[in-house]
Image (cartoon, rainbow, N blue to C red; front, side):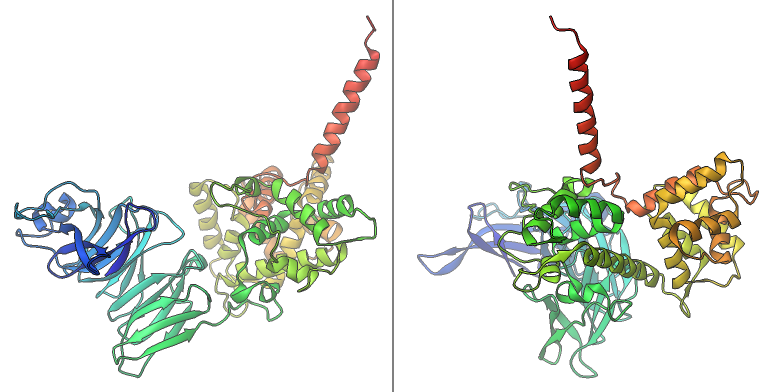
Length: 534
């Protein structure tokens, strides 16, 4: 059973289903204090969509074993069957169910409008994503959790949860790509698909050694809590561990419960990752209204607002009261404001402390990206390092595969790359504009841009030492003709895209545009003075 919203705002009915192939909608009769049948649906094999009907025989009913409502579309509900069918259905269907008696006051209708790929056994659970309109997950006796789109028959992804049954799957209400599964082995498995790994991020045992985890539920008030029910009749409250970061002193441990942050903080932090230090220095000086070298919360919020508005992502998600997208923090303290200004929000923030925060943030995010590749003995493969360099690059997928394939072939039995080597190279990249200038000088002087030149530029511009092995990998990626010289134009363009992290355009905090506007105004004024008076 499940509550279902009715057409009249604020009213709910009860949705029920069973093995007899019927889905019923009941409404509450307040006068008689009982449930009254409002709508009926019957699933029969001969009235299923063709893609599913071809896999079943006879004219019998479809035993319903799982049911889910779409939080995005009140007309859509999903049905899983004992025979492995997975169907998208519509409450507004007007097709009468086959064999339905004509004398009934509520005539059963045939609701199925689309069929997904069938499974090898009963479907035990379906859950629609609270974050993605067309995404849902299903699971059953084959031990797989299948991620589906409402728009296509085949699953997008299949995750091996257990070698036993999976009795329930559920999306996290807190994190868009996190889901949990209750298994016949008595375990609750937590998967984080954002890690690009199909292995469980956490496994939590429930009940006794012979018990089965039959159901689960995330807590909608506390992101760390999950409740699980067991076959022995017991229920348990399971506390998830805090998000584990690579370093014990990671800055994310101080930003919110379980490493969670607000949407407004996310927009700001994404911008911080890709913005040069000098731009922040200018922004702080512009909004340090009293000139004491510090900014208070009110001044910092002005800095935040300007920074967000200058990013393509910030502009896409700017305040819109009609859609519910709001970045305003008035009246409440976010994780960032508490971090910078204390619990009472009366502290002061200096540019030096903010730049140190930016440095730690960039270090922690880079370490997370490094750890995501599952390093062996503290090293990742050359191909994985190449993948880190080419992320957000915009390189066409065919060329990207060719570049990575070349790396794998060239460094088949190589030594791997440590985090220190990775961090040194990305420190070098943070100064990409100065690197571009330095390499251009070499090019104009007629000197080739070889590995020795790159190491010299890194020492001069970024004060870091690049290892010979890292240089070998970089040149293997960007030495197009194999002559030992760097293709400077393509290298710089891709590295700038990498630093921007897909934000699409540079951030100038409005300062560059302010200077351009002043220059244009001066030109117009000078032109007015130069024109003869009539």
